[in-house]
Length: 182
Image 1 (spheres, rainbow, N blue to C red):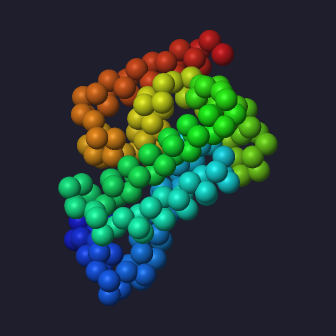
Image 2 (image 1 turned 180 degrees about the vertical axis):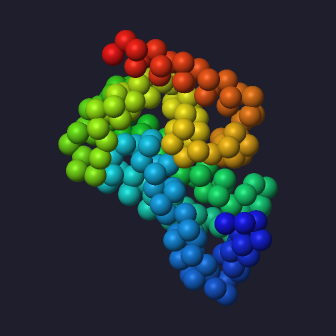
């Protein structure tokens, strides 16, 4: 979506006139990308669907407050990222385990997920990613799987491009090391 189309959609979303049609268009345009962003974080299909639904509810309720300081998709990704992190933190707290332990459980549960289509190599990669600190996981997933540019990730995570490049570099080194030893 180019910036003119995004601006037109945003104007429609922020006016009371045609908000439902504009919101339907927004969901259609971003649903799949946001789903995979969330799915890379929460690992489970059903959990990703639940978080995605919460994201769109939050977007619908707060779209009129969007100031346009960032691109619309950056704002959507930021909401999706924060909702996913909140979901994971609540899940870890509910089971009285650390986020690292939860991450390992989620990877182990991938085999039972009928929607997971990865092979052994994919599972190994997911295991390697699960060993990373949360921020490195986010940066790696956004750069490697979603092929976002550092500039875009910077807007979403509200951090400098230099810090993101360092996080991605560290993440890839840790993943390489994990894959060599396992």
